[in-house]
Each structure stands twice: as C-alpha cells, then as structure tokens.
Length: 339
Ligand SMILES: NC(=O)c1ccc[n+]([C@@H]2O[C@H](COP(=O)([O-])OP(=O)(O)OC[C@H]3O[C@@H](n4cnc5c(N)ncnc54)[C@H](OP(=O)(O)O)[C@@H]3O)[C@@H](O)[C@H]2O)c1
Image 1 (spheres, helix red, strand yellow):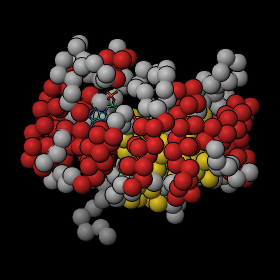
Image 2 (cartoon, protein in one colour):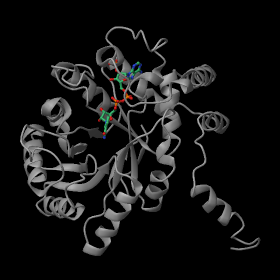
Image 3 (cartoon, helix red, strand yellow):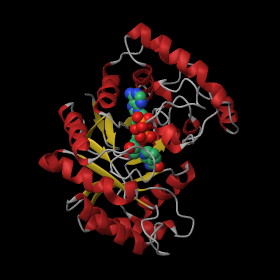
Image 4 (cartoon, protein in one colour):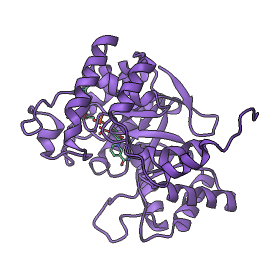
C-alpha cells in the first residue's frame, strides 16, 4: 500500500480507501448486496492490505452500511479512519435532510450509534444545501469538533466557489480547516479539473475520488451497454450513473486494455492507477472479494509517463474560459532569468 497525508494535517491515510455504498442486505439503491459476512471479508482483506480509510454515509442503504462497517472494523477501530456524511434524506420528516443545525445534530447522533463509535474521523457535508446558510452548517460542524464527535471536517460534491467561500469562513472565524473534498473523477469524467482540482491544490485539501470505475463501466465488463450481464450494477439499476458521453467509451476501453496488456494489468487497474497518478485518494468500490483484490492491485501498477500522457490526451477536456485566458495572460508573465 502507499500512503499520503489527509489534507494539511499530520494524519496518514492509504491512497486507496474502501467505499461501503454496497453494504446492506436489501439492495434498496440497486447497487449490490453485501451482507455482514462478505463485508467482514472485504474489510479484513482491505485492512490486511494496508487500507486504513473507510468511507460511508448516513444514507447508504438507509443506515445499514454504517452498521455493517462499524461492526466489521470494531477489532481495529482505532487503527482506521472512518469517514461518513450528512446531507441526504434520512427519514420522512421535513427536517430529515439538508445541512441545518437540527439535521446535522440528529444525523451525527444516529451515525455514531450505527457505527458503534464515539467519534468519526472525517465528517463530510455530502453536498451543498440550498436552504441552509453555510454559516449555520459550519457552526454546527465546529460544535461537533469541540464536543469530540468529529475529528476533521470535509465536503463532497461542492463547487470550487463553495469550497473557497467555506475556507474563507474558516479563516475569519478560526474554525478547523476542511481537509478533503469527495468528488466524482475518472477517465470518463474529468470536469473537476476545471475549477475544483486547482482549488484543492491551492488550499492543500485532499481529493477523495468516488466511483473511480464509473460504477464498474471502466472494468470493461459491459461490452454492450444495452445488454448488461446479469448481477451487475447496470443490470440491477437499469440506468447509468454517473452519466457520461457514451461515444467516448470504446476508445477509452481500447486504450486501457492496450496499456493493461503492456504493464500486466486489467483495465480496472489501469483506470484506477491513472487516478492515483494525479495524487488523489481513490475510494474503491467492490461487491466481491475478487473485485477488491483486483482493485487493490492498482497500487502496484507502474504506468509510464507515456501511458499517462496517452490517457490524458485521449480524454482531454475542452479548454474553458476564463482558464485559457488566464493561461494566456500568464504564459509570459515570468521573465527569463527570474528566480
Ligand atoms: N460522495 C458521493 O456523492 C458518492 C457517490 C458515489 C459513491 N461514493 C463513494 O465512493 C465509493 C465507490 O463508488 P462506486 O462503488 O460507485 O465505485 P466504482 O468503482 O466506480 O464502482 C464499483 C462497482 O463496480 C463493479 N466493480 C468494481 N470493481 C470491479 C472489477 N474489478 N471488475 C468488475 N466490476 C467491478 C461492482 O459492481 P457490480 O459487480 O455490482 O457491477 C462495484 O460495486 C462508494 O462506496 C462510496 O463510498 C460517494
């Protein structure tokens, strides 16, 4: 395993984290059923491979994912970083959703109970809440940190301007800095490179990547998206999520296959290794122990700079304004001989 720091802190996390969105028996979200017994094997395998980062959320399988994760990590609870989230709808009430003080306080109480722990290491706003002033949410988060229920705050699915506003508030109020942003990123969706990635670098926040295989698409197992093999996420859900431009897919699959053959890796491993090359922490999803073993193997894949360049060029984003104007204006800003 390889390791990095969580944000600008002294806490060390593995570059692969285990996602638990599939944990639960009922398959409410049609993401796949991972019951307690398999979850124990997945978590043990991840832990024995050096993974110390485990991501969940209050909404995954209506809270069951937190219960299962909490039980599976109990033997080594203090050796692992548990990340969970608040924002999604957890009940029928008007206030069972969002980032209000009421919901944040109710949700952490329920998450701690389900996880069977006194604190979560990383508590993430699962998304922006259009109704709650972010100041209210941040004050509630800070209270949880003071109470010892949360160690570090983080965000997920925020726009760069929202994170910038929030970190500005951190500075002016003397709050605990937000250490990470959990975002979708893969060879099929590089949108965060426009604004989010530069902001995270600037503010020394860790990029935590969700759906690195785009829900399994980048494993190459869907030869015909209209006829997915049985017992796959696409067959179960009947729709693609996260969305992507389908026309892009064949050339990307060809390329990761080709590179995989050269370096002795599967397409899934190449897709994950490409994200790792960008300095992110990748939250791998796995429904079976075999998938987990394969995905963990991505850490050992050494992509050559030429491979990364090929993948970068193949999936390059359209240059966006004002980014191209900023680049243009700054291209000759630093004079020759300047030190
Ligand atoms: N913050 C957010 O809004 C957000 C959103 C989504 C996810 N997440 C986090 O990110 C984690 C990972 O997301 P994800 O599960 O969507 O990741 P993913 O890696 O894109 O998809 C995982 C799924 O792909 C299939 N798969 C995985 N490895 C495979 C392999 N080697 N070969 C063939 N199929 C393979 C499995 O589904 P099947 O076998 O069922 O086809 C597996 O459940 C989640 O658990 C969660 O913690 C966060």
